Image (cartoon, rainbow, N blue to C red; front, side, top):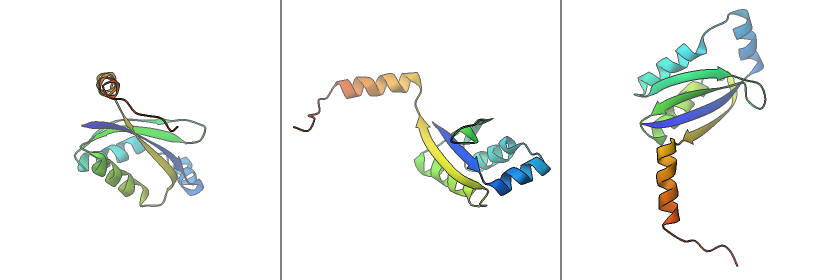
Length: 107
């Protein structure tokens, strides 16, 4: 399965609800990922452009997109950004493949 990272930002209403009634959102998101046949890795909170990120595996890009659509549908997230991740062995393979062809830059 492919590995994905989805960064997210909560709405102010979501932060207020979590402050009033703290909840392990990793358990909630993990259950969603598993319903789609994926594997949840972890959730991290942070500061900056996003409030946190989740790392999970999904069978394919369409499933990863469906997970994000399902997760955002309640309206508690104001932004998400999903990035497919590559293992080092996958990166080495793609670099070998890319090195086997040439591409001309604009003249």
